[in-house]
Image (cartoon, rainbow, N blue to C red; front, side, top):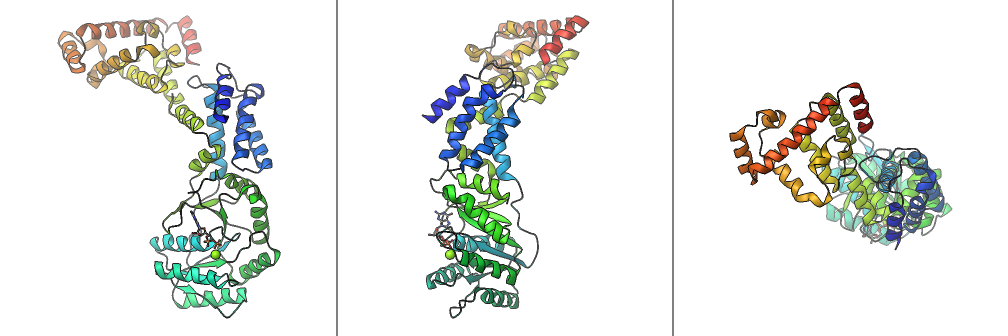
Length: 434
Ligand code: GDP
Ligand code: MG
């Protein structure tokens, strides 16, 4: 499967010092395949992979993660960044006029009502204007939604003059003291020049503050054309992605964002009026990458050793004031990693502690003993005398013997650090801290 191939491609990358074009090639090829199978437009997919490659090439592989994890993290981060550029906020003004555009069946009418409901909770007084005049059923649909949600709806069943309906609807809403006016428009199954000209005229007439393209997340390869066409005609201010409750991997989101650079502001997650939220780029990125294993790899990479913390500890080691609190912090990072990782190599004398994959119990015991100490004891291990040892051992369910061994090893480690404070030692420490 794709995931298997991905994983094996990544496994081959283990142990390299720097990310390079060669050692990333397989992983990036798999990513491109994943993007295409999520229906990202092929040009967008190609460009995105190029960008990731440029961002990653030459980066040092973090000590704490495998190169494969690191590439996945970069891919995930870049995708999240790209999808999340721009704000999800609507213009902060009253009255606020919003025009909805998009293909037929994309969810314009439903989203008009969802948005009105949401904004009503934020203190707006919404009104809906029915500008989809070609099918009586479309007007009925908006009216029904309005009645159910107690939102006034302006309709004119005798006219097909959309700009005029828009203007009159606007006056009607103003007269009612409404400060959020949403214009629901018509769509076709494909881009239709006459309809596009109609929304251009409507736009001129009503001067909307926001023009939202409502798009089905399953739009596929045409997403690029649709977004480009509407954007050229009316200058979109936002995209609403609908039907994210469906199966579509949602590559259309990336295609539309990459082509128009218009922010994705909201997402529809069901037919119900409350199934609507601001857009979450992180969730969308994971969905587009679409590989559960890879996502968990990313999470693991993100959870694993915090480089700043490692740096701080290395500084403390240099000064030889590394204490049991620091030791505990080290151990927790090691536990998170699930293996020794690179951090133990930074710890002089740690080999004697024999903490490794196969020593998980020992790790747990050591942690329990340190946790049974008071913070003062952890910072000043030399004060841990006989009666303290008995208390700590009993508190952690261990023998005094085990505690003695831990303290002895820790003492040796500290002594080593101290002896390394000399010039030769410092060089050695610096090499290890890198
Ligand atoms: P319009 O032609 O653009 O106005 O689209 P509609 O608002 O009439 O929606 C078309 C269909 O899609 C309707 O059956 C809606 O209930 C459904 N729909 C809209 N948004 C969503 C969504 O986020 N999830 C799901 N599952 N269905 C949706
Ligand atoms: Mg409609």
